Length: 223
Length: 223
Image (cartoon, rainbow over the protein chains, first blue to last red):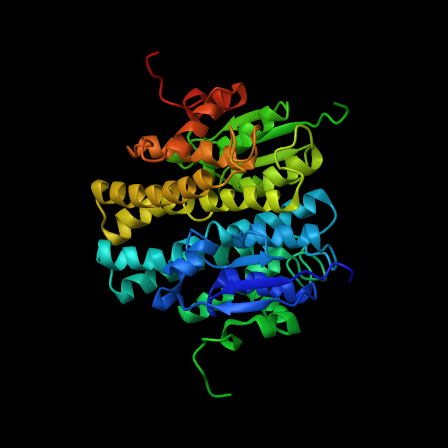
């Protein structure tokens, strides 16, 4: 590769959106220095980080000292355009639309409902308790998984991965959704196609190394 | 234009996501037959429409009788790739990432929190009343507008529109956010850059014709 950029990724160990970017970087063979923020401790609102991303959100990717790129899908599209190999989008236009639509079902229709700032509002302003938030999160994740299962199971374009035989943006998004599904105790068994593809992703080194449980800041666990 | 596709857009008059696609079609000079669903009446769950989009969501765009394209951002990217003129994304890679990041701030961080299915859950399952939902919606729209204002006001890449002197995907998304902001009584005055760009969009025929208030199914109003 002739284009070897200097990459710095600001992330958080259990951030779904950071996970997507981490996997994309790994699949494209790009090494990034990762700066681990602790969102539970409010690191995202520290002046140093707000100078990087005034939205106070991760991921933020700095490429060659340019202003930070933000929002996981915008970062993925950037990586695909600048580092096209291996491709994480198919070549056919309708197929690209299918992959991006699966992504949107996760990153727009599902994920935003379970992020920490929504949890905080529901608990502090609406008065939901922990069980109420679990029900809320389980509801939206279940709805997302159900819609994904319907789409993936019935479409012949689905292969070993969401689209064909190699991972695309859609698998990065699907993999990221499996994380809170487990945290919130959502069983993947009713969604066999989702479960099969998630398992296929987890056999890939890029996904395994990017997994939240293996990041700096993650709670240590036996095994 | 040599590529003149047959386009059918399934939408709903006040759907923010349909509005984005309508504007993109108009800016690119593409004529589409619009099928107006009534989401309040549950048209999206009728078997005829579920055969088009099993997610029961609009917009859905059928191009030349192929399977429907779904999710507004996936549709916009498809339209840009198939009908590149006039471009709705800048050419520079970092600029494209900036535009897509502004879109994500709206379509992922903000819009999903105020859609009808979330409103229904909050009212029926959580017990919020109309005022509580108004507070919820106002909170998330205000947060989104504030983040947009900070980004747009401080960045020299902002021009007459979100990025430079011509509309991009970012303006389609910004324009769509102005609609529920008004419905929920959110004043744009504290966000002068957002207000200025929204007004600039509304002077364009493509935005004006696509506006929810001018669609089939919208309540009639004096003027």
